[in-house]
Length: 252
Length: 350
Image (cartoon, rainbow over all chains, first blue to last red; front, top):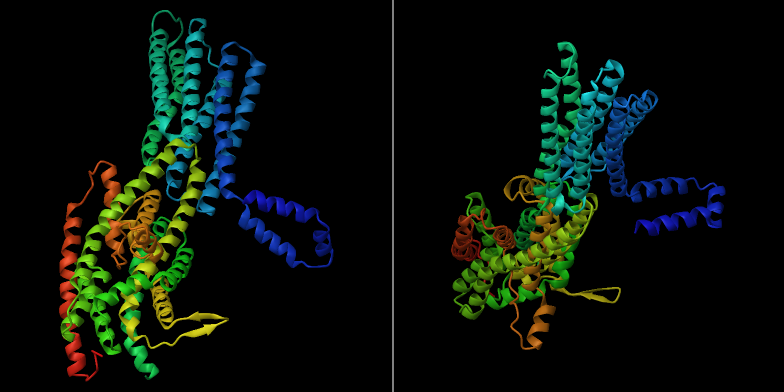
């Protein structure tokens, strides 16, 4: 239906008829056209696209977080700074999409039955990019000195956290279309989160053990950085548990 | 006859129509409007248009059955019967008792038969009672079938949640239009059925199309229903959508469609002729209770979902209504006819 109107509209704009009425001073035509555009613009499609772009931004943010942490651990300063800039842009981009999603949902009263769930889901996912940005910013500002024996552990935590987020985003995409299979992704997200917890525990044992030779304040700082790296997986787990509820609500 | 007198006698039927529009439109669009899937304005316009179409185009079958039950041959008698049914519905609703306009009107007609000393056709009565009992059962069966189809479609197609919302809205609008048509076709007999044999209208011809007196009567009834929809149904819709039957829009679509099918099969002359011409058992054309069909459909869905939330008292309430409503209405009708004849000196039996 929409395609039909778009074709008609394009043909109208390019036609001689359009030129005649345009220059014959029929201003009303433009008014009618504006109204027609307002009526037939497919807000559902716009919302669908915004959700998709928002999830893409979150995915990109999580990947940038991983690459940024890797760069920091490898001491690649230039690349790391690029990642910080990148995540700032991605976080802004995600925020813009989230605002659009909220606007379209409220302004055009789309999916009234599920809008609260969808908004809650999207809103809680916004923390992913916020936390990812915060971690990279903290690394840039605090510049913690990470002991070489901990580099792999920190890298693993970041990798698994990224995996948890990646799996969650896949699950959310499925919730929007094929909600029956969402449960698999929720389970996987939880699995990655518990792996991160194990890694975090082990790294904490190392930090506060005798192997690492540094002051208590430095140890506490490393502990905090490890916690921050693991926070992404915690967010993923929280969102996954919400998703599990919303999945049931979607089944008729 | 004086225009004012005709208006006064028809007022009982018009009140029934208004009441039907105010209450039953909520069964069709209640969830859709209550959950803001469809705006009230849109729902009211669709409902009104299709109720009128259903009443004028498909209302004769059920009215004919009521005519077979008791051919009321005096306008004052028809007024008393209709007013008694309306009063019964009002009184029972106020006391929170289960009630249906279809059952009230049947009781009132039997009351007229008793008053006039005419034999009531037991065959027709049995047909009508069987239909009442069968209505919620059939609604439940339809709801189960539609529910399975919808569930399978949703679970086996990758429809985006946003698109699903769009389709649900359209589904609610289309099912609502069908439901309104079926309501008009089936329940117009409750509104104007008793006036059919004493219709004060003559056939008129507009642009070569003849509109019979009965069709004009049904049009008037349809308009009364539409007025009920516009003036009072919003309040009822909000109550239905938000508190009483709190069901999801997709389940509401199933319920409305199942209910509409039930009302349709009990009012479609086309279907009746199609089945009887092939020597197949046909659905009798009887006005049925839409609210009871809705309860049946909701129970059907509850049954498919495991039957955990079925409120068995609702079934009991329905059965009480089958007996209580016609009985009360019959007594009120008899008393009203006596008063009208003996106090107001009106000719209630032709």
